[in-house]
Image (cartoon, rainbow, N blue to C red):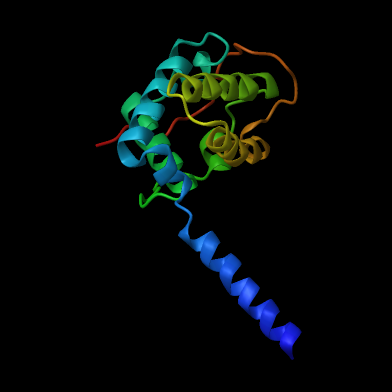
Length: 158
């Protein structure tokens, strides 16, 4: 009985420690920081010849808003993401593994620019990496590939 009581107390203590830790969103700096990071990241991506052709038909304000909301939610923030799921949003874009990796490199460069600590950087990248299965349609290392003419982007924001 004594061992059970000690185990319960330890579990409660560990749970309390876990619950008191700030969310990744808060540790990154909240809304202002997420907006700054997404703004810089979007600028990098749109200037990066390895990936920018994939955004040729995108509505930039929609892309930035949805990306900001997505990052906010993915990091435990209070935002609500109303965009499409990753699979649907990237369907028929013919995104390659190389292009996904180039986007990841752009994100790391942005996180480094803002001096995001390694722990938080790893957590952000850990949240992004699993999305490859829903975004990548061509498993090769090519970059700078054109957006297929048949791709239909989401409508612009109203």
